[in-house]
Length: 278
Image (cartoon, rainbow, N blue to C red; front, side, top):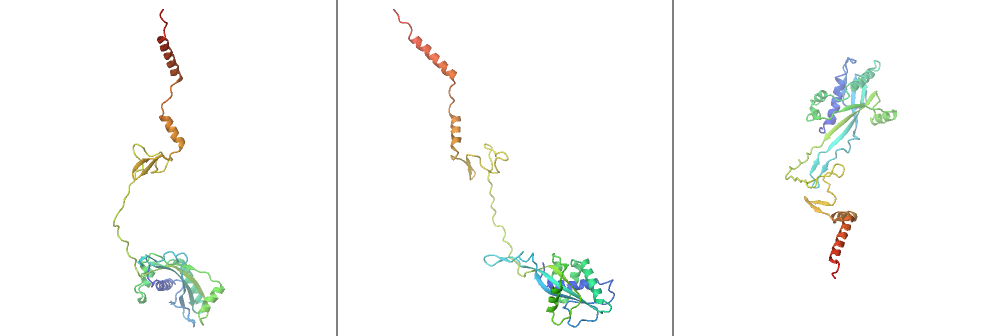
């Protein structure tokens, strides 16, 4: 990110990029100026780089808004994401088609260098009026994209330039330029206390259920885990309790054992009531 001088820095770097790459097609001295098209068209070979509009980038407009705490403390630094709209015009001797030759070179240069080179940014930052600009340190690259303007849009653009005759020109958009706020947010306070909690998920007596039966740390049916202790539940369904009671009840005697007991009782009765003596 960069400071508020980034807009002017991009304009100066764009003019320098065009000026240093006109050869070999142009072998004459060309003046590249960062101003709006003049009301009196120059006769000498001239290229004007005019920034006619600055807009917020649609995709980044609300991406990073400044946020403050309830007490007004800044939490996030404000960032403005901008798109720069240029119109580049060419002037020169009409009989020799100088303007058309210059516009052709502009189209070729911005196709060869769609991203603003770092060395051009550094060279433009040496101008006295750009002292303090930190665009060269920004990680965000500035890309130039040709724009399409129909006759109506072109007429409106040149109509805004009072008493300026139309000349051959090309529109370009430069994006993305990020301008960072001056105020720095307060650093986050250090960690004062750590709170580590450990919970048991199984015991040797009652191991964890198999995979798919229950999730990690799930309690077994009929057992509640609270604070690391295991407590029995009494909210089991009625059929389950009946089946458990039936298993605990003593098994009934087999029918064969009952028959043997009856025969033994009968023999004892006959011995006790033997034949009477005469």
